[in-house]
Image (cartoon, rainbow, N blue to C red; front, side, top):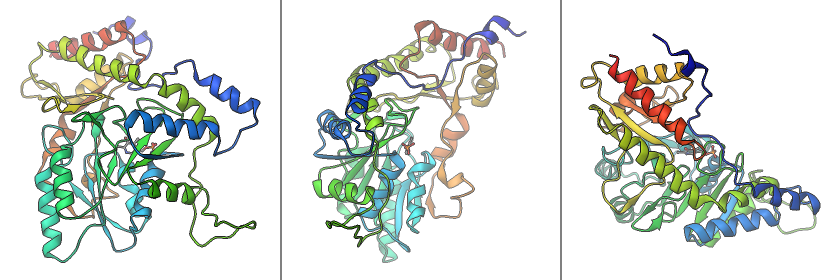
Length: 386
Ligand SMILES: *Cc1c(COP(=O)(O)O)cnc(C)c1O
């Protein structure tokens, strides 16, 4: 029997934008000064804010996380015929820029605790390529749902094989490994400020690096690669990838509350864990030990239908949808995507299984206590009625 009051209840979103109230101040300032263009004081200030927060040495704000990955690959001279290793369990934007460059993605599966790149499979793939006389140009390492990957092991292997790491920290701004911000371990790191991320500029991204030259060069390429001359002179192919000064104004207001946003997302995770603790067959995406500090951008669970009397992730997805609650299965791994399945992959079934059983729960930082409770109660009801 359907509970109509629940169906008519207001929509609960998976991850919605959450303004601090300070954004308009920076946008007004930009309008008053006619700074309605890319490259302006809000952009420079946002870059300073990001550097201060993450401890990174250099930062260039761009129009998306995807453009940041693209520029990172260009800066590492990735081109036709090259291979780039990439986490298979991710959003397609991690891998698309490899193909923009005419290079070949090689997908590496996850390990079951962090759900991120398996150090064992990474080493296996590197050894395999080494024996074939081939070395990947880069490794794109993703920190999914905010959970840091096994950075100690991955970075050690990458150093040993001398392959640069680009950290796709699009989902993990505010996450740390051993007290150090994700995104700051590799040659370069990227963040995303898309509307669904932990903070947003409505659309935007950033490239960070311990090497200032990378960020300077990214700025040059992102602004049409103009050589120093009074006329328009070009000796490189350029891009129009710079963040606008208006979007950066939103970002400045958002950075002021990033710490609170991380705390709230983590609290959402703790709430769901506690409320669903009694339900057999539900497992949470869990930090392996205290070195892993996740922002828990999205609270992700897996459901074992053998224990829940046949209720699986999609049953819950559809049933919650009836209750006007938005959830989402976990990312479909890249090696299973029609557009990527032809590429090489080192796979052991871990992400296949996660995709088959996982679900992301509503995790917005502006979700109310009542809404969270509605989600938890609905899940209990769906599992218990079976
Ligand atoms: C969102 C996201 C991106 C892309 O960021 P955009 O700013 O949307 O271009 C890349 N990788 C991952 C893992 C993401 O979640």
